[in-house]
Picture 1 (tube, rainbow, N blue to C red):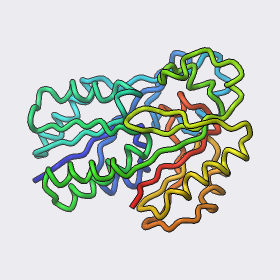
Picture 2 (tube, helix red, strand yellow; picture 1 turned 60 degrees about the vertical axis):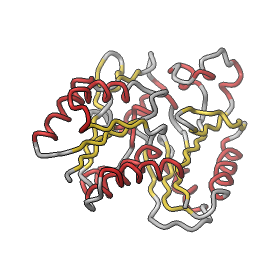
Picture 3 (cartoon, rainbow, N blue to C red; picture 1 turned 90 degrees about the horizontal axis):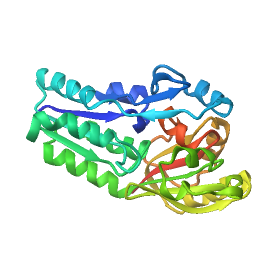
Picture 4 (cartoon, rainbow, N blue to C red; picture 1 turned 60 degrees about the horizontal axis):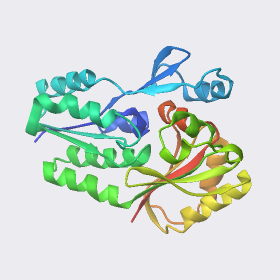
Length: 276
């Protein structure tokens, strides 16, 4: 059975893994000063984060259209695909899931559109697991179970450098309120059940990184690990060096994609962990 795996660019999967596992990634859109950029294609991540604090008006994001998804699904079926599993960022963060679901309506029982309830590699690790299983020739049911298995074990925790960008984006309900001096704190975010939960704040970056490392080490030995950053690569590499647990696979350092960085801002640091 030929199964194709589709996702969106918020999955943050490195290009070499996308190619190796034949994953189909649909880019989201980032609008900067009225100009439309394909996420991860038309502007480098480093350029985006360096420009972000200097932008007169905040950038915005948009999903690819349902027609874009429909055209991709049709092309894959024309190429002999029997089933498509399309896995996407949490529906509470973006309209991607709805766009993909609408694009899938013409293909009925051959389509399986899934809300990952996650973002960045919290989504990405589910996609990779599905693609690897599909390439091994696993059944549709086995691939779907593999996705569920990873979802149950994945944790995404991040420290933002400021609440400013999350507040401006309006994507998270608790960040929409007038927050005054709270813009000066560094909030911790845990993605649970598709929602961004605030799990405390710190006043200094040094203290925040120490707490983030403590949260990671408390998870024990891991199957997979990615350290996330938004233009804070030195901190990310040092953070990874300080990790004390055992890891089944090589850890990744991920420069978070622009479609996510628009909402979290520069100098964020976090991790995605798949527990054993």
